[in-house]
Amino acid sequence: MTGTTGDNGTGNGSGDTEALREEIRRTRVELGETMEMLAAKADVKARLKDSAEQAKERVREQAALTVARVRGQAAQGVDLARAQAHDTSVAVRRDPVPWATIAAGAVAAVVVLLIVRGRRR
Image 1 (cartoon, rainbow, N blue to C red):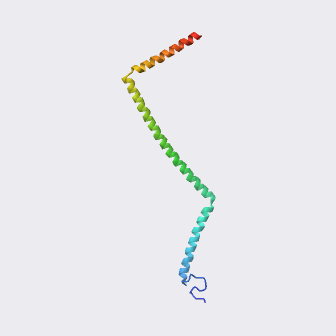
Image 2: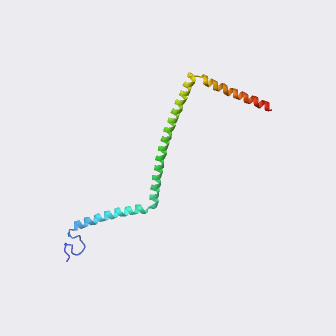
Image 3: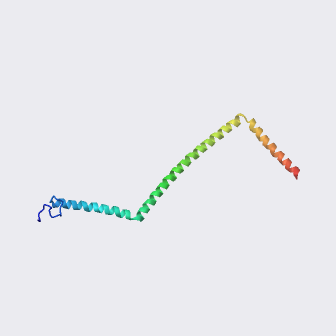
């Protein structure tokens, strides 16, 4: 009855004590890993801290992307404004008469307004 055949219910049927010890060692290692995972899940404070750090990192990445996009759009706006200013200056140099006419009209309008205002007093 006390043989190594595993009939006493303590073995795995092989009767080999080394195999039994190895199985116990593996079971202990697996149990330790399981306990570590459960302890990590139970540590709410650490999980919240990790979650907050991940959220901070996502916000930093989004901010960096937004800054880069805005800078790119601003550079395009500056380039567009420069091109339009250049085109306008070229147009004025080619044909200054319309611009002189507009300036003379604006001066005349100001003079008329000053005269009308002076007569009301």
